[in-house]
Image (tube, rainbow, N blue to C red; front, side, top):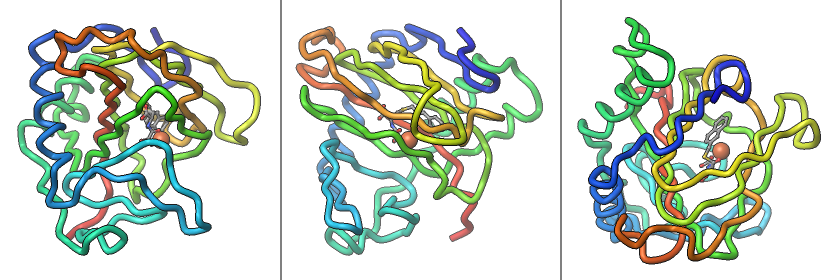
Length: 210
Ligand code: MD3
Ligand code: FE
């Protein structure tokens, strides 16, 4: 479906084998060099979601190569196969074009949600690029709240995201407010490799050059 201009939701886009491959890769990335952790916010808050980054390390509210807010180590590289995945996702969501073939994500944020994790309404604007964001979900279903570009409040649309779903946010949707209001524990198929909880990968273009 196309919930808004530039936003495309393709339910069940990932096959079971791809979900397993991604879940396995995420488990390895979660071990380090910069381990999965609850991100600390500059004003003292701590996110309920746990995150590990590839390519660039997101620390609110910038991207760096080293995780100065965790252990000072350089983040793991962004693998070429994941960039290829992103191009295929964009091509399937928007239709193949020169633009989708040239899509070159250079960072991924991998988020793990347990049954009580949430993500408050926010915009993703630390990237110095307006290129689309590709989102992939594995494991438990959640309620994804997709809002507007003006404020975190209404109007917004609540959309259920399930294991295997692809969501692409580009064009006028790229800087919309969004969040995750609820996770439904026990809704994921353990065959994905996620025994419990929800995994979300977002592929992005930072617009940064080394
Ligand atoms: C809409 N993650 O990591 S994915 C995030 O499910 C984030 O973990 C959520 O929001 C999650 O920043 C939502 C869907 C998503 C991701 C990026 C977007 C929606 C977006 C960027 C712009 C607009
Ligand atoms: Fe976001």
